[in-house]
Amino acid sequence: MEYKTTQIFGLPIIKFESEYLLNDDELNFLYNTDYEKSKPQNSAYISINKDILVENKLSNLKQKFFDCATKYVQDIICVNNQFAMTHSWAAKSNKEHHQHNHKNSIINVVYYAQAEKAQLKFTRLKNLITEAYDFDLDYQSYNIFNAFETMISVKSGDFVLFPGHLIHTGYNLSDKEKITVAANFFIKGQVGFENNVSGLVI
Image (cartoon, rainbow, N blue to C red; front, side):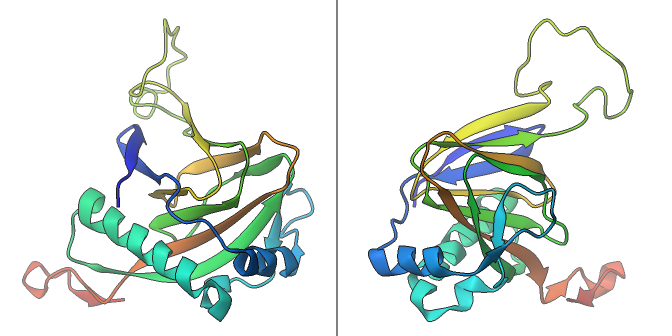
């Protein structure tokens, strides 16, 4: 499994390109799932089922989620701790998927089930200087170290993984409805060490 990496202020974002394309049965299942707006002001519709990857019709896709998350843990975080999927859901949007982050999530995985042309924007309110000193600076240019946002292009079949607390916004640049499937992962099992007086079980 090959992937591309980017970052915003040292926070790693990885993308698996064209990793998995849904068959007709899988895509129809997502089409026919019941959706709702979690909040009236939100622009995207979210599946009522918040454990959608438990469904048998999506078992192959679920395995891909675990494969991608395992690569993120092994190659990016580089720890021996175990991680578990806590929630999974589908989302539909015609243009913009409102700005948000994912609470109680260490790793967020987003899969683009149907996206002819789309973008994902990551945003931080403060950069490496303003995080410590809230200066109103006069910037000559922006780069990966001082920027307040970064944008990546995505399409059907792509997976994108990033820390769950990162603020992000989705954009649909085509006239065809965008459908995504997302999942949160959180640490599980033994964390810490008794000799360090830090051991606990989650």
